[in-house]
Image 1 (cartoon, rainbow, N blue to C red):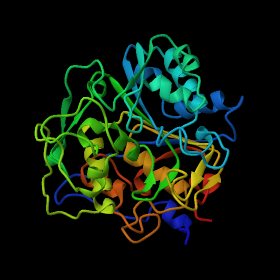
Image 2: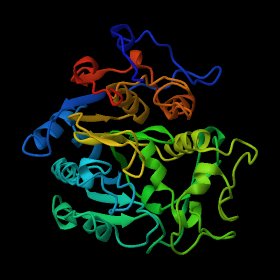
Image 3: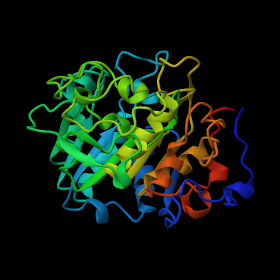
Length: 375
């Protein structure tokens, strides 16, 4: 059943949720929404407008190193029918290319494209080529563009430990690639999608993929991180084993061993530990029903939207509302039928608010831009 929004809800009668007792309200930040129907000629002016409504890119990135976590979930061989991956489960190559070009024009010192491709140590450029992307076009869109597979150390010497403020919900800290430390601005560039385990996958859930499978993968050794990634991140979903002993261990091994409990908490932990400075969501073309074509009953959908914000919880809350869902819904309510709400957990950690009453939406309004994924 799709979630029906009343104007009263959109205007913010809903109260805040997920706060710790005595904690000040989680921060709020504006979210920019732009209508864009295709990845053609209208894309660049639409993205320029998207960032202008937030005050422009230059003040955020000029003279700085910008790291962009892409959403390239699943193998390049997975296709929704015959649709290119960027029209379904991946962020579209042209969105990445235009964004890189705009960063270059805004004076970014260096731009680093990051992703942890599915259980592989191959160069990120090779992974893109397998999906018929042109990494050379991305590399030349601005000066000093680099690519890195963060699923293992590669040429790096050691992982960096990112402690979770307030102690964490699943782990007290996460060991990640130094690429997520060695930047001035961290961007999550996500896709507007539902998720079979977490309800929705937006800018916050995109960071689930910053965890290296050499540590959090099924084939990780028992003592030290592996040299190469092996297997998926089942331990983060089900807790059936612990990371290598040299890495932070789970806080409570007696907590629920199911993905609907664990995945939202791991995501909230990660975003608290490695804050997102700019959240961008590609919703021009996407898929409904799940995060990839391996989920049954997924189907194409064309929301025609671009969404961006400086706070990931606020950005994801607006994106969730644009999908036709209540961003403050509890477990048992669409789209969180079998999981906890990552945004509410993020609000409880003080990252940002998911209360639409406290979020300024700039550009297209929720009422005119909503695209109900369960319609």
